[in-house]
Length: 464
Image 1 (tube, rainbow, N blue to C red):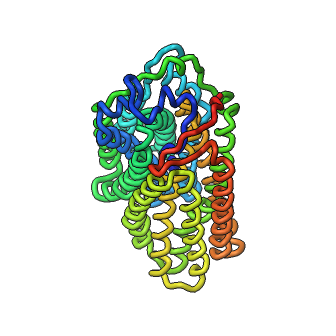
Image 2: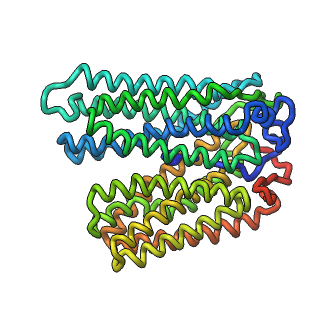
Image 3: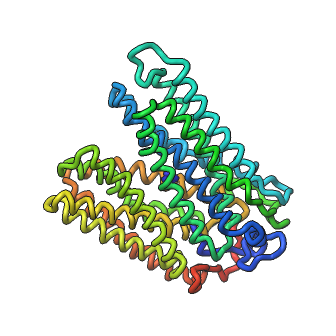
C-alpha cells in the first residue's frame, strides 16, 4: 500500500468460509486463533500489529518521500530523483514470490505457523540494512561532488533491496494479522494497521528529513534503524496459535488463489473501488502549489494535517465497520469520497487556498476511512489456508492501480485542468459506490453482516 501499501498498506474481516470453523471461529476454542488472542490479550496483539505496520511504512516514507528531496537538495538531476518511483516495484510485484513466503510461513503437514518468526527476523534484517547504509554514509564518503556523499545509484540500490525485504515481510505481516485477530475485533485491528501505516510514513518522511537537516542523513538513517528494532518488541510479547489439522494439507499457490472465485471478485473490486481516489490523490499537491502554497505550507499539509486527518479517518472507518459491517461500510465511504472529490472539483478553479486546504484535509480523512473499510471487506475474502498470499494479490493490484492512476491523473490535469481530473475521480467513486452496493446486495446470502460488524458466510463453498 501498503504503502502502500500502502500504501497500500492495511483490514477487518467481514466474512469467513468453512475453514473458519477451525481457523477463525468467533468463539474461542482450545487451540484456535481466538483462544490465542484471549490468552495474550487483545491490546497486546493490537500493539504488536501496529508496531509491525509502523516499521513497514517507515521504510516506504524514507524511500518514497525523504530520499527524492534529499537527492534533489544535494544536486542530483530530476531524472535521477525520478528513479525513486522504482521503490514501488517490490510492492507491486511481490505476488511473484509470495507463494514461496507463504509456504515457508505455513509449512505443509505441520500445524505450526511461522509468521511471527519471519516478521521478527525480517524486521531485524531490515534494521541491520539501514544501519549498514548509515555506516557507509558516515565512514566511507565518496569523492567530492557526489550527492549525499555516497555513490547515489548504490544508495538507491540498497534502498530498493530494503524495500524488497520490507515487501516480503509484509506478506507474513498480513497473514499474521488475518490469522490471529479475533473475528469480532478485526475492525480495530485494521485501525491499528492503517493508523500504524500513517505513523510510519510520518516518521520515515517528516521525521527523517528533520533529523537529516540537523544531523545529516547517516544519523537519520541510524535512528530509523533503531526505531525499526524497537518496534518489533511488542511482537515478542504475543504468541501464534497453531493451525487446525485439516489446513495443514494445503499447499499455498497462485493457482489456488485464482481458482477461488472470491479472490477473482476481490481483484476486480480493488481495481474499481480504487480508481477514483488514485486518479486524484497525486494531483492534490500540485493543485495547492499552483494556487499559491509554498513548499513549507505543502509540507505542513501533508505532514501535520495529513497524518492527523488520516488517523482520524482510520478511527471513523473502524467505527463504520464495527457498526455497519464491512459490506455496508464500503459503499458508505465511497459515497463520502465522491462528495469530497466533487467539492474539490468545484472549488479547484474558484476557491481560496485556505478552502482548498480544508477540503484536502477532508479528503485525507475519507481516504483513510476508505482504506479501512475496503481492506476490511477484502480480508473476508481470503482463505485462511493461504491468507498472506491471497491478501498480497489484493495489495499488488492496489499498487498497480495507484501507479496507473497517478500517471492518468497527471495527464488529465495537464490536458483538461484540475477540475476535470477531480470531477472524473468523483464520478468514478460514485459509480464504484453504486456498483459496490449492488454487488453487496446480490451477494447478501454469502456475505451477511451482523449488527456487531461481523459477517459469516452461509454457503458451504470451499476456498480452493
